[in-house]
Length: 168
Image (cartoon, rainbow, N blue to C red; front, side, top):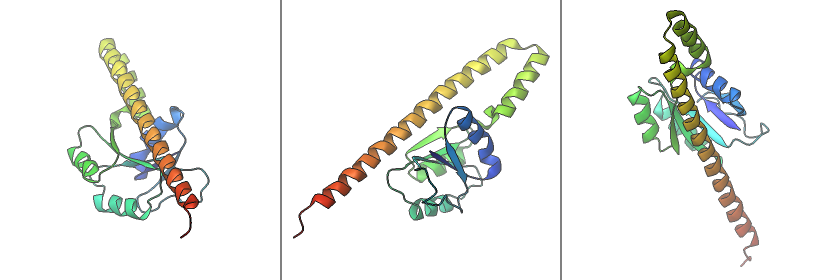
């Protein structure tokens, strides 16, 4: 389960892309975390970081909501260097570059516009670029899920070792 964190307008397209690609997710804001007993276990915490996102608020959220065995990542627009520097400074596990122009509605509109203008080759390049982006994002999400699993195994092993330790 992915916890998608950000403002409603920022996470709408990313959430739609994740759901269309078979990912289960829950949406929350930086100020309002998902309750710990909300059912399914969060594996990846994905922060959507924009130019107005407060790095301090994300840092506080990471400190106060530090569930074990969770991978964290920032999601930034490719041209937003400010958001990228925030994501890197926060020490997140990974940074996913997600072009806001690729949101499904924008993609359909661009496809219709290019068909009307007769620029089929540009659309073909755009589709290939989108497929490459999709493959890259899927690889990064798999990596984050594996990282979360490895962390959870470590937590379980350490917990078992503490339980089996002889009492002095």
